[in-house]
Length: 210
Image (cartoon, rainbow, N blue to C red):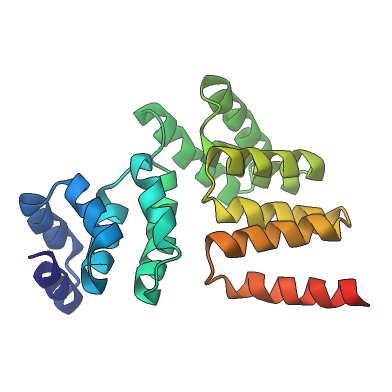
């Protein structure tokens, strides 16, 4: 049934109808099992559904899918897991994380830092609050603080490859080539389809040989 609904979705690209029909036949627990153990097309469909319906409780399922044998599953997981990260915590926390995104996109970094401070004072496990504060701190010139926040994001969420990439770029600004390599390698380990990261690793490895 799930495979058939997914094929219909590919033909018509009606995501709302796809989710409605899937929800009539499957609960999220069943979808997660299919994401891990189903055949290829079932895994693709399941990861797509989790991206639409899941929250942070499904982070491990999505994180493991980043290393799936099927490239389409990996691509769907790469996209969907970012939505999952914004759905951590209470409804108020989720709303504040969305506000963080907006502030940073508008280059209002001091406001973003203040909001992230309040969020983390309430819940230190909010990995996206750590990551967004790291972005803001880096933009404000506090590179060491940004590296620390990237590490905290990864401590909270071992699949947070953007935090690993951010940490690597901050290490480059600190002329810490070893730290940068470690960050890029960790990001690639989490998400093996990051070709830009692979290029950075090759470049740094060549420099270290000279």
